Length: 205
Image (cartoon, rainbow, N blue to C red):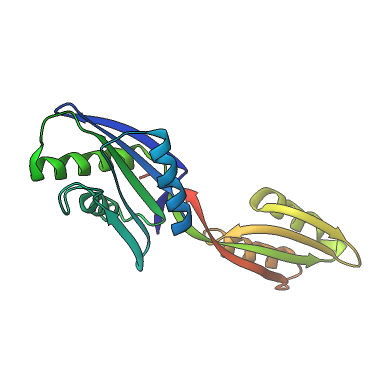
């Protein structure tokens, strides 16, 4: 599952009409509504505030905001789908330049502006992340400590009868680190998953 990081803004002009495309990473409909309100404040007196978003397969929407049916919001939505993005909102603000574009011209202008915004955005991918704990005897501290400090995101260490390490891993390195800890911890599988969640990380594509 792919998305974008933060937000990015682009601008495109077609026959004196100014199109401002803004792409956002979003998580909820409430967040989307707040962003739409803020866009109208940032760009007052625009002729159209069109948008589309996809949160997941069951939560997606487009709005033509006064443009002819399916000439603005719908092509924006299609751009989002083409790039397989989720948790994503694209807003295209239009200041009319006095020259009518026609249905085909509107579709091209809105889809092109949306595509420019997607291209400019930093892409992310959703992965599974794990918060883990592993305990070890003091005899095996050196090897365990080195692996966790160098190859995980260490959160804390607690010293008692045994040493307990708390750290974070993700799906790409989980099995590798699990095997290394097993081999350095007297061949005992003492890795415990405390929490599993989804998060986005930057990707290049």
